[in-house]
Every structure is written in C-alpha cells, then in structure tokens.
Length: 226
Ligand SMILES: [Mg+2]
Image (tube, rainbow, N blue to C red; front, side):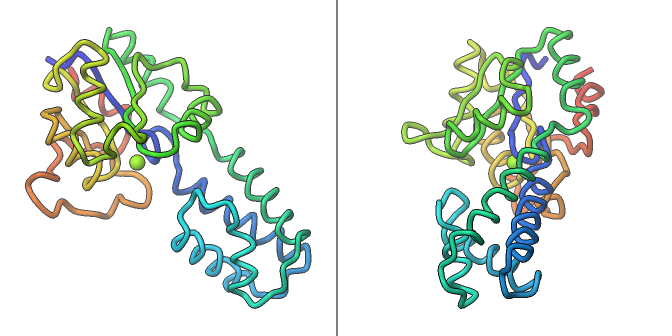
C-alpha cells in the first residue's frame, strides 16, 4: 500500500499553460496600447518565437521581440510588456480548484506528500509560496546542478529517500508522459497521469511512458488510493 503521494508542480497543481498564455496576451495588449506598431497576432507570435528560441528564463524577451518585429529599441514598450506580463502571471498563479482539498485529504489519510519538479529552484519556490502551498509538503525536490532533471529516476529516488521510504511506497502524479510518467516508472513508483494542460493530448510512445492510472482531476486520486 502506498505511503506517499508525490506531485509534479507545473500543470499538475496549478494551470501553468493558462497562466503563461494569459500573461503573454496581457503583455502584448499592453505593448500595443503603449504604441507598439504591429497587429496583436504578429506581436504574440514574435514573443512566442523569442521564448522558444531563448528559453523562458531569458531576461530580455521584449527587447528581442521588438528586434524581431523590426521596431527600434523602446524602453516604454518593454516596461509596458514586463508590467502587464507580471500582473497577469500573478493573477493566474492560483491552485487548481481541487488542489488544496486533495492535498488536505491525503494528509488526513496520513500519506506523506511531496513535490518533484524541474526548473530554477527559487522560481519554483516562488510559485509554491504564491500558490499558498509551500508549507503543505513533507518534501520538495527541485532538480538543480546537483540533480538530473526528469525523466531521470534520480530526483524521484531522492524524494523517496528524503521521506525514509522506498520508491515502491510512493505514487507519483504528473501531466507529462515523457518526464513525469517515464521518470516515476523508472524509479519504481506507481505513476498517475493527470490529463490537464498543454500536454494533455499526448499518447504514450512506449511502454516506459505507460501510466499505471489516468485521472482528469486530482480529486480522483482519493478513489485510486482507496
Ligand atoms: Mg508539469
């Protein structure tokens, strides 16, 4: 019987896909309102392209976006984009409606609970603090320079160890087959695919990506674990 339930963070405990889309759209709208000479589609596509090229943790998305659109460097436009992006990002940084209730129910049932996530550690903690979830977990493992990212089994095994458990005692819940499910399976955890967000249409490409369970709501975990 499982003794711990571990979770991915992005698109598992909150809607990251929606948050990012709304933040980008808000940034583009604000830049247009501040005088950017482009259509909304052109500006949005340019921003998406820059993020795809430079990664989401690059610090000069808007400078490059203007360059891409053939617009002279313009600090006011960049500031308008940055402010609007952050305002929407904060507004949409809320847990899924069933996240808190599910985590509390699992703790009531005496499960140890935790997070295993990739990303910049300070950014991932910032999200958990703003989500109001930072004190819920018995363990939080964020892959960094010392730990291979998912789908390596390393962070999953480390999470189990940090709880004094074997991977086989743990259930892992995540939205990505190629990261969460593959990594949890490799580590020997029971994997649960949460069908939510931008990866929700993907199908397992091999046996190692096959989840033990599939759910569409976190609350369904409470039935699986009965
Ligand atoms: Mg995720």
